[in-house]
Each structure stands twice: as structure tokens, then as C-alpha cells.
Image (cartoon, rainbow, N blue to C red):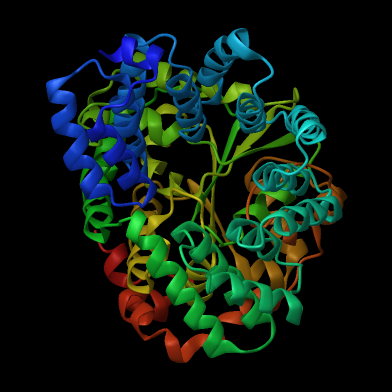
Amino acid sequence: MGTQSIAHGRWHPRLIEAALALHENRLDVAERLLKPHLKEDPFDAKAMRMLAELAWRIGRPRDAEHLLRRAVEVAPGFTAAKAQLALVLGRMGRPAEAMPLLDELFEVDGEDLSHLNLKAATVARLGDFDEAIQIYEGVLQRAPNQPRVWLSYGHMLKTIGRKEEGIAAYRRAIALNPDLGEAWFSLANLKTVKFDEADVAAMEQALKQDGLRDEDRFHLDFALGKAMHDAGRTDEAFGHFVKGNALRRKSQPYNAAETAAAVDRTIATFTREAFKEQGKGGCPSTDPIFIVGMPRAGSTLVEQILSSHSLVEGTSELPDMPALARQVEGYPKAALKLSVEERTAIGEEYLRRVSVQRRTDKPYFIDKLPNNWLYVPFIQLVLPNATIIDARRHPLGCCFSNFRQHFARGQAFTYNLSDVGRYYADYVRLMSHVDDVLPGRVHRVIYEQMVGDTEHEIRALLDYAGLKFEPACLSFHETERAVRTASSEQVRRPIYRDATEEWQRYELHLGALKDALGDVLAMYPDAPASFRQR
């Protein structure tokens, strides 16, 4: 039925009902309709594609990929499934795998605007920002009234530092669709844009619209939170952050106990004795520089400083190390059973996978995925000569900054103050263990110390990385390079002290966060003694 129904455009009534449920984000209803339908007709590619969409929304990307590959297999001419598979691969950090699918789509219809948009997003993930911008400009010449294309175009302009043009693109998107919450949030996310009274009124009006999508609503709440924060209306700002986070959490569930258990297993597995037994091994390359830690802890600042050095290339937040660790069946215990040759092969595979992100022949490159903190022991096994830097910031400042920040994906712990506090404590707990079993292996950059004595901290950072001091590292804000994170505009300014104290305005609201942090808060920047006892 699958291929034939695609060709003739027939829709089973059950699928129409499931499509409506997906549109209204009633995912439980959609699942109850789609799973029995696929049992009855396991070759219905439309149902597979819809179930893949559901899997993606509830945070099961591998299931989404599997379903889409199956849909393409049973219905090779189903271009919508092929396009969705390319999109999923790109969002999973595997854009190179998406490119052959895009080539097939362009063979069928190279002028399809949706395919052009998808190609632009994919080449951007590969670091080809100039090509992405050219594609978007071509699309907008042909179809200038598409707010979401203007939004994506603004993202690209922001990334390469064309801030004013990026702002104009976001404003154009808003003019075309005043309810487009992501465009408002994108302006707020620049951190340097101040909303005026007319902006605030427009956002408040948008929130009153009947039928406003949850996605637009939480983006508007985060943007209004920023506007109220800038206006000094602290309680109103916090109220918007709470609403935005609560709504975001509905579609991004998080289980703090699972993270704690993962940390427990990692600590129990990677002991001092285990590393001694492993001996030497792994890929000997010194190319990678990993910057790990919490988001919003100054990692982009550290990346910008290092990328200002003539020998270092900044890339992005690369998902490859966690993906490789997950491929070791039975991780983390099974990682200790890897042979020297297997560990070397994994290190080499990492270098091969990330090579698509490199644009220069500089000897060193940066992987700035914060979540790699959980895989520092694994990095030691497979890339023992890599540089590892832990960027750390005051627990309340860091955690509340995460709570204020809407992340597109991958940081579900940020949508609740207790969750983000527990996550921070688990991160400190594991990094304390690493300090104990691999003393001196990780260099820690404390954000407040970097602000207080910038040159001293930069020299210490370069010395640890084996790099000679270069004055350009002190004037890092003048370095022209693409920056994809929420701090893109902040690192294009000289270092500033404001962020170290912003949380204090909200301290009356942070009781749950303080409770979750426990002794980690009192002991900062050190770890609690209980973490250091072995």
C-alpha cells in the first residue's frame, strides 16, 4: 500500500486524524492511531513518516531516523520522507550524510524552494555559511514574503558577524508575521538589542492571539523576559522565564536521576586503577582542543580567545564524541574492554568525522560541545593527547543564565531550576573525580577569574595548551570568525563584568536552585570535600 498510496495521494482516514493530532501537538493521540495502523499496513510510508515526526518531537532521534530510512526504502519516490530524513540527519550532527539525499531531491526538482532551504541549512551545518547565505538570498529574490526564510537568513548573517543585516532580516520576518515568536527571540538572543515600548506591546499582543502555537508562545515569553530584564522589571521578567520554561518542558522532558546515574556509572568505571591498567593507547593526535562544562559558562569566550591564535581553528559544538561513545555497546564499562587498536580506531574515526567542519590547515581545532564533560574519561582513552579545558562559572550565575536562555535542543535540563542545579552538581562531581584520577589532565578556566585578571588567565590557558602567547588572543573581540552559539555577539565585545552579577537581582526567586546545588554552591570554585574523597 505504501508506495502506491504515495503515488496516488490517497490518505487513510486514520492518518488524517493522526495528522490533525500531530498538528495540535496531541502526541499521545497520534501515537495511538499510528502504531496500530502500521501493524495493519507495515508498508505505509506516510504513516512511517508521521511516526518519525512524533519520535523526533519526544526526543527519540534514532527511532525517527530508522522510520524515515524505512519509508524511503519502501517508497523511493517519497520525496517528503527523503527531505525529512536529510533534515533529521542534519539536526543529529551528521550533515555530510544528508548531502547525498539532497542531491537526489535536486535531481527530481532542483527549483523546489523547500529543498533549497533545506540545502542552505545543511551546508551551514557543514560550516559553509557563505554558500548558505547565497542560497537564502536566491530564495528570497524569488519569494520575498516568507518570514521563516528571512529568519534563517538572519541566523546566517548573525553567525558570520553581519549583525545589523541580521537584525534587519529578523525585523523583516516580524513585519511579515508579528506572531513569529522565534524571530522576536532571535532579536533578544543577540543580547545587544534593546526592545522599545512598541516591541513590548507587539509581543504582548501576539501572546493574546487565539490559537497561538506553543512554539511561538514560549519564544515570546523568553523574549519578553529579556525585555523586562533590560527594563529592570525583575519580577515580571522572572514570570516570563517561568512560563517559557514550563511550556518548553512539555515537549522536552528531562529526568535528572538518569544524569546522576550516568555520572555514578562513569565514576565507578573510570577509576585510577582502571586507567593504570589501560596503559598507553588511543590515537596520538594532538589536534583536538575540547572545551567542556556547562552552557553559558564562558566556553564561547574561551573558544574565541584560542581561535584568535594563529595555530588554532574554531569549529563548533560537535556531537561526534558522545555519538562514538554511544556506539560502544555497554558503555561505560565496555569502554575498558576495548583493545589498543579499537581505541586508536575510535580516535581516528572522530578525527575523520569532524574533518568536514574544518576549513583551514591549522594544526589545532576546537570542539566546543559543553556536554562532552560526561565523556572526558572516554576522551582520555581514545585521544590521550587531546587538550581538555573545563570552562566554569559561578553556580547561580551559570544556572540562572541557562534558565533564561531558550536552547533549540539538547539542553532539556535547563527548563527547571532544580534540574539545572542538579545537573551542575553532577557535572562538578564528575570533573572532581577526573581531577582525582587524572591529576592535571584538565585545565580549568574560572569565568570570574578570567574577567578579573584577563591577561594572566589567557597566558595560563595558552601555556596549558602548549601555545606561545600571541597579542591577538588579548584582543579576541576583534577576531573575525563565525560563531554559532548564543554568545555570538557578546564575544565580539571586550570582556565585561556585567554577567558575573546579573543573577543577584533574582536571588529571592532562586531557592529551589540553591537547594539543588547544595554544597557545590558554598564551595565554589572548589568542589565539596565529599567529591574529592576516594
